[in-house]
Image (cartoon, rainbow, N blue to C red; front, side, top):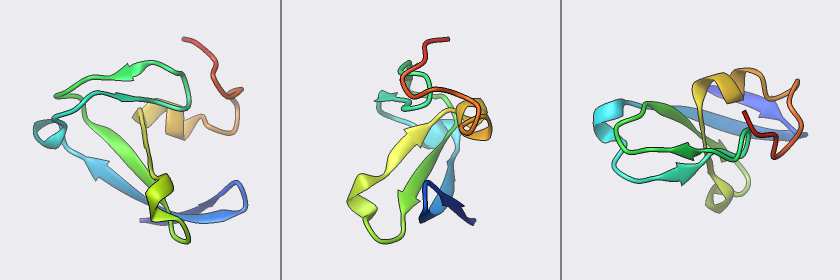
Amino acid sequence: MSTHWLDTDVEVRRIQPFRATKTYVCPGCNQDITPGTGHLVVVPIEAPDLRRHWHHACWAHRDRRRPGRLR
């Protein structure tokens, strides 16, 4: 699915729990996304190397959260 965020077109991909094998830090909350946790990968169309892994809820509330806010 494609969307627009921070003046950039991005592709949003769902990662199923069985495919999540690494730990990532969510930019929405600065908390770990642990292996086995379903989440989203947000990939800027113009800069795919800048992809980020997000919790579902953090992505859904991205416009209402300050960057780096802890839970």
